[in-house]
Amino acid sequence: MSNAHIKEINIDEGLFLLKTDNTSSEKIKISTKRKHLYIQFHFVLNGQVWFHIIKGTHKLEIPNEYSLLFFNPKNIIPIDAVIEPNTKMLSFLFSLDAIHKLLDDFAIDFSFLRPQNKQKKLYNKRQLTANELIVLNQIYKREVHHKFDYIYIKAKILELFTYYFSQNQPETLEDKCPNLKNEKVVEKIKRAKEILVAHINEPPPIEDLANQVMLPINVLKNGFKEIYGEPVYKYILNYKLELGRHLLMSKKYSVKEVSYQIGYSAPTHFIVAFKKKFGITPKKYIQNL
Image (cartoon, rainbow, N blue to C red; front, side, top):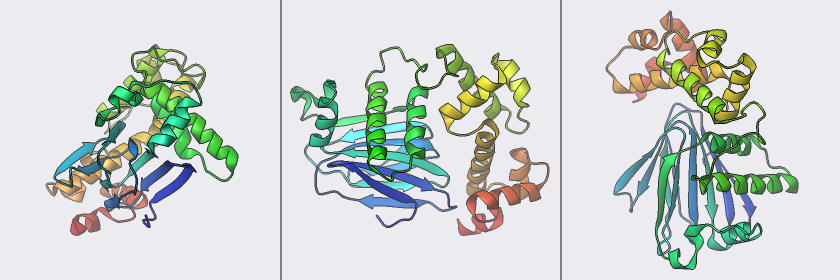
């Protein structure tokens, strides 16, 4: 794929990693077909992706912090997707031999690979857990330069699978992040995000936010970044600008109205922030719709 927003890394024979980062103000399209059957795992870390399936006759939305797994043992499924602006996605493509090799090395038995299930179509869309988000962000940030980076990513993929296919088992975060000591802490951090989103026009100061969810400030700040991949206020800034972009797309509001709706004290501040993020002014963005 030639699109500059997409980086493909061959981790091992039959195992590919795709990093998608659309920082532009335009949608980008992925359209590719492999020569062999692959199990596809797609993880949307930020933003929104639309997958075209069944020869493009159906559109499937994968929103922020959701995953999609699919595999058809009888047909080669192309990756046919539209990536919305401000979207980050990690994708893993496994040949059957590659996924067996990875899991057999660790003597792990996943039910979907058992012989009685080998002819079944796989399809699973669900929200990502905190554990999965942490591992995915670690993989996303890792640059691949030498063999030790490949080993690191393979180990992280295995860790991700442990969480992904063991949803009924209790999750612990102690080994990965000392700030996330138990599920109650994770729930409090999720609650902090909900408060920020609910008060997007006037987000509370970090001290007040920490008090509301009853967490030390350092635990909230470090834990939030571990789970969501960004510091607290960078996350809410990106959220505001993405909300502003969607409001502009509706063509129901002027730039001035949108700026006030998402909490900017002056339209000029919104215009500067929007252009810095999307590379285009809100007015030109509307004109290009």
